[in-house]
Image (tube, one colour):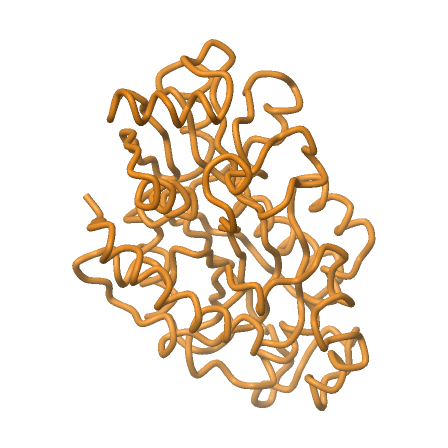
Length: 340
């Protein structure tokens, strides 16, 4: 979300001030490729590790979580399994991991909603900065506003005009309150005064299926969730949330160029563990994940799905989380948003 924490397209080596040499220095004592790290008297992981995802199957978060788990297993790092825990805007997954033993056997793939929800919901049973140990900022991905082929508008300018002329007329699906798509749209509404109706889902493929079926007028979701349908012609892209046009979809205008100069709302994906997880385990997971993100085959697959790889030390993710919270808290309060 914050430009200081974001990687330029090109990946790990293009992080400001962070090259491969810096990555090695950031992980003292870690020998990459060994497959284990000291954890008590036994190698880590000695038992299966679950990677908890705050969404239903399908969509960008599910994609990157499963790629990571599959690569860990393929590289003989141990047994890693994905567990989808959708609900309450991601809070069910976040609370589960926050309350899990700090033994490295429960991990979390988190997105923006981890830092958004404490300001959006009346109460959450976790604190993003004290209940989690950052491991690595894996990737960023743009949000995109899409409509179905027979939708009421065919361009972002027409969408904005209808939202201005007929407030609440357009039904826009999001993958849950507090999701990046929710906040991306809320920021547009707050700063322009236009209004549409928000239809929340529990992540996954359901909002996209409903959009294709014509049950909603549009959807504000991550690019990875719809890139196949956009390329296949089932969905019409209206606008993307990057400050400049995105390389994979160069014909799609940005929100910035049509409505809000300077607008930039990407989604991020981070790997975390419960606070107190032993430092050698965090170091091993950080190194293993950076290895995965540097693998050309993995980079090609994720880039094709719309991801921009980041990587780096745990501090990159920790800093992003701390900087994200006040930004979204201000927007949520100013716009009068709340989870329903």
